[in-house]
Image 1 (cartoon, rainbow, N blue to C red):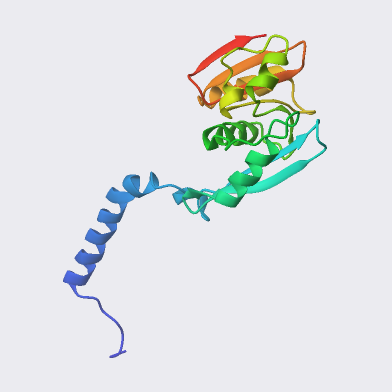
Image 2 (image 1 turned 120 degrees about the vertical axis):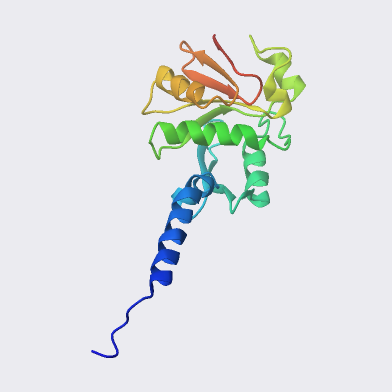
Length: 185
């Protein structure tokens, strides 16, 4: 047993000290994006447009940044379908939509009713706000088959990402990335 490994007292104390340093630093590293998620912060959105029949299922954020091709694809999907005009859609509202869907723990796609609206389209819609965030590509009106408007709006409001409008009679929820507020329509 002459070849048996026997660490010195210095090596043992050094190992204990290194372990204590790692434990003390853990809260700092735990706040790093994706630390506890293994593969990193990956964000996905699933939507279906009732108006155009189009659907989208895309990872729009990976490796700490938005995926430009996916954000462009989402912008096209969220276009004003009446005038076929596209505006760069605000990624913060994509985050709101994805986070809300995640809180509800469903893989069902949103039924997207309205995304970007041109000023002309906004003016022709009864009851649309004259300074709507839809005209800035910062809002979406959505619903889910498997969740009530109340469930969707509660999840959206919990995300603290902006405005949440609840439209029970029309069966949809408005989400935008403007100031945090809530209302009923």
